[in-house]
Image (cartoon, rainbow, N blue to C red; front, side):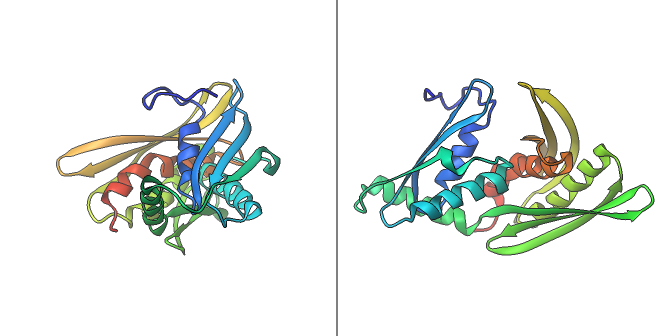
Length: 230
């Protein structure tokens, strides 16, 4: 896979996945190879010395599944290690990753149960800085209704991380792109007088409502990082 320019299209979310992997403790760099239809062919990870390769494979699998809903066969993940002595640039990148981990937000689970006739209760749980945080929403028992409820519950948790600004759900939809079904979530982010609409996407694999949670996280991740408390 050739290196893409920073502003070039990224239909398969490769750069997002690579950025996620480089945020893991002990990872110095990551490269993901995909086929022309978006299938993950190989994941190459460079780690610091002293990191257990087997544990790192498990960490990579868990991070891709939890954050992006992407299940990758462990046999496609290769781990290489470098010497403990690293240049100052690598040390600085490690400190940046450490700070990111201290503010980490990881999707943990989505539970759906019957609330009443034609309505469901959706409970979304995130791991925020190592602790479980959850929120609930009731919604109509339809595909769109469950997606809206799941996205709203996710935004309730994510909004609590902000020290300034507010976020409101603008809408959800399902769309087809490159032979895949995607959940698209629009979030209105407000700070000051000028609202900003941010969009997030996630492939629909297990359920549309689960994809809506991941799309909400994708939409708000950068906006939250810039406004959340340290």
